[in-house]
Image 1 (cartoon, rainbow, N blue to C red):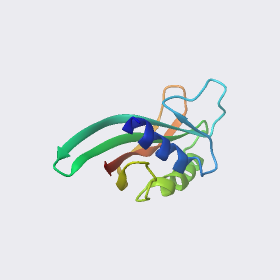
Image 2 (image 1 turned 120 degrees about the vertical axis):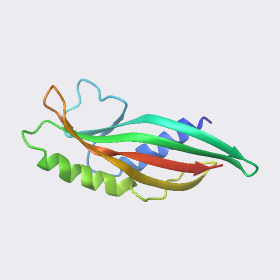
Image 3 (image 1 turned 30 degrees about the vertical axis):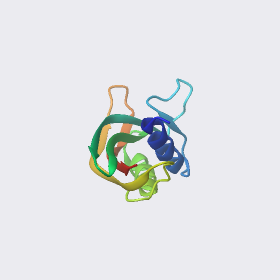
Length: 125
């Protein structure tokens, strides 16, 4: 199976253990904040005699429509605890690490807070 599907499914499964709904790439128009959105930003493969190593960078954000970011920050902190430095179960791969590499914190033009981070996932087959 495609490693993007496997890694994305593992990430989604870990996030779904939290208290908000999570969506891949974009939430449906009927979604009511707060909710989470995760999407693949980039990835790379490296090969050696021992197999394939791959890294994936995911943008993981909690979306709120509050006037201030306080609630979103708390929800994002709880969501990040579900995946930061946590062993994801990825069939066919040894999960090496999942770590936040950069924060994400902004208010979009429609007034929604986007709070979370860029998470790098390392795997080896």
